[in-house]
Length: 157
Ligand SMILES: [Zn+2]
Image (tube, rainbow, N blue to C red; front, side, top):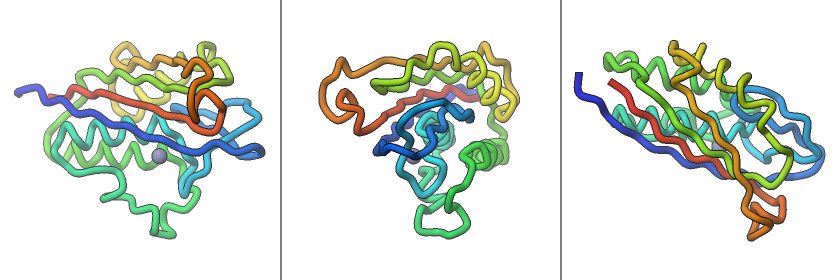
């Protein structure tokens, strides 16, 4: 019953005309992520955090981006499968804290929906899923709108 901690980080390139999936929902945006999957950085960081907490390597190990099985896959399925792997080890979520860093659009109004979507998948309360958004103050590739980053920490028991 000892708690275990894990962290995850993910980056994607942003390009015009692609869809922006974040936290399991589609966000209206001029740019979206270049990715083998749907490019949901929030869910990818959370997958790595919970897998890391369980000592189960990383998302690329379980769901390789060279496999046609995962082409354009909905990242909610990757999170479901990652959660199934930690459940097999008898683990459940205590809480998750995530920060997503992008220049635009503003995410504030979408965050409650993201939290509830993720909470359902991870069989916990939205209160246990924190998502925060910040910008890079126009600095570097995130600040110029060329990329997006998310970082997550997960505590499991
Ligand atoms: Zn990713």
